[in-house]
Structures are given as C-alpha cells and as structure tokens.
Length: 341
Ligand SMILES: Cc1ncc(COP(=O)(O)O)c(C=O)c1O
Image 1 (cartoon, protein in one colour):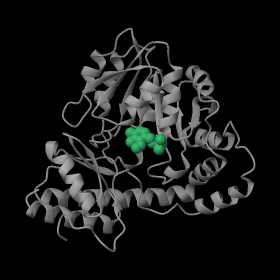
Image 2 (spheres, helix red, strand yellow):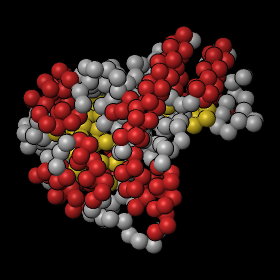
Image 3 (cartoon, protein in one colour):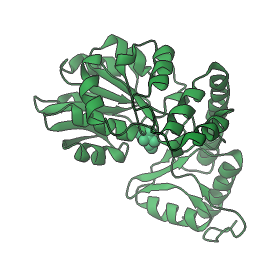
Image 4 (cartoon, helix red, strand yellow):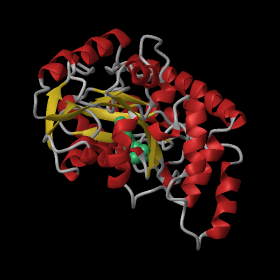
C-alpha cells in the first residue's frame, strides 16, 4: 500500500477509540433484544440487579457500589459530589476526558506532569493541599499504557490525607498482565479513601450502551448517588451488563482478553521492528511518542484508511484491533516510513 492512498474497497479501520474488535459477548445481544420489547418502560433507577451482581462478584456490600451511564459520567458525578474543596489533582498526559469532567463538576484541574510514560506519584502527592477535593489515578494510563506499581501506589496512598478520596480509574483493568500492578479492589480494602472506577465499555464491548460502575467508601456513596440521581443506565445497558457478569460469559471474556494481549505483544514487536519507539502497554492500545510527527502520522494513516488518535506534539495512540486491522496498520507504517514519514 502506498501511504497517502485511500483504501478504495476497505472500510476504514478505526483504531482511535480503544474499542474491542470482538462482537458482543455470547448471549448478550439476545438479552438486549429481549429487553427492547419493553422500551416503553423506565429503567430500574436503582439498577438493583446489576448492583447485586457486582456486589457478589466484588465481595463488597451493595451500599458501596454506584452504577452510571459510562464510567466517565459516573466519574463526573462522583467528583461533583465530593465538593466543596476546589482542586482535583490528576496526571497529565492522561485521559483527555479528565479536564472536562473536572470542569463540568465545578472543580479546578491541577495537572501533574508525567514521569516519562508513568504517573509521577511523588509529585502528585506533593500537589495535594488543604484545597484538594480528590485525586485521579489512571491505571493503566490512557494514552501512554503504563501501569502503576503496587509499592509506588501504596507509598503514595500513605502520604494522602484520609479525607482526600483517591479515584483509581481502571477502565482498562482487564488487559493488565503485570503482576506488580495492583488490583484497585485490594487498594479499596486496604485504604479508607480509595474509590475504584470501572467500565463495561472496553473489554466487555458495551461502549454503545454506556454503563460503568464505581466502588466507593459507603460514607461517600449517598451524595454521589444524589448528584447522579437522574443519570442511571438504560434498561438495555443494565440487562447487558448483568448478562456479562455470568461465569460462562466471564470465561469467554478472559479468553478474548488473553488473545488481545497476545495481539498487543505482536503489534508492539512489529512496530518496534520497523524502527518506531513504542511504550510498553498494559492496556488495549499502544502509544507512539512521535512528538511533532504525531499529527502528520495520523493524517497519513487516515488517508490510508486507518484512524488513530493523535495528541499534537506528544504522540499517537493506536488501539489494538483485529489481526487484520493490525496487519493493515503494520503495512501502512512500513510504507510510510519507507516514504520518509
Ligand atoms: C481512562 C478512561 N476512563 C474512562 C473512560 C470512559 O469510559 P466510559 O465512559 O465509556 O465508561 C475512558 C474512555 O476512553 C478512558 O480511557
């Protein structure tokens, strides 16, 4: 393929949104179709069946669980409910939604620059003051793919005042294989101020339905539930999420994540083999720190029918797609580099 040439017959390969390349998990589509028979009815505003399923799965009481229309929406309600202190400390470069979420929640963003690909946890702890409403951690980090280490997070949490909640965003948790990276639920059990944020959008493949959840110290759930009271997941989303939590579906989810992680390893190896710098990744995407070449790279990729996410001046984030899409990407990169990109 020649770079810059539109790929006539292929639909674009969208590797820009960190979506799963797999079709809906077994049985989930049927559950959604069945739920569609009662579209005239409001959803259960307490999401009782989903909260019960999560409570059983996670081993925490239902009073510790919040569900919402995507983890981003839920994050906003949580941050809003944790006021009135003004500041929210967050890593930067991280999820592009954080500054928006923090602003929408009526708070002030305090970005703390990264240490390479990773959070600078000592600097984040230094940034916490009596004005701090809460801290956001992203594990693994979007867009750099770096996972936090248990020892580092514990040293960080030991420095954070007990009345400052730390929200650990685990949107990509299911793709983590590094045993040194902590499970947010273990942190939740060990520290009284940890909140864990997860989503059904990524590994579970329910991005279109908008459903996520948080595990939050019960003393904080009431205010957050009130803040988000009119924003509960749709009936279809609740039904699909419940169906996704059965053991049989869980086995297929694990199989898919293992397959995707193997594909991630292959893709990183292939791109490095072509001479690119690729950050280590514990997520379903890879990060190329291309600096000023980021936008030209993404533009050329788009012309070649491949959509990636460019952060101007920083780099390009590419979702690990199907083997076919990844092969297309590899062919594009090889041709583009040969062409002097
Ligand atoms: C780190 C992180 N958190 C949260 C989200 C939001 O996910 P959703 O609102 O679909 O649950 C995303 C989406 O890309 C993300 O990358």
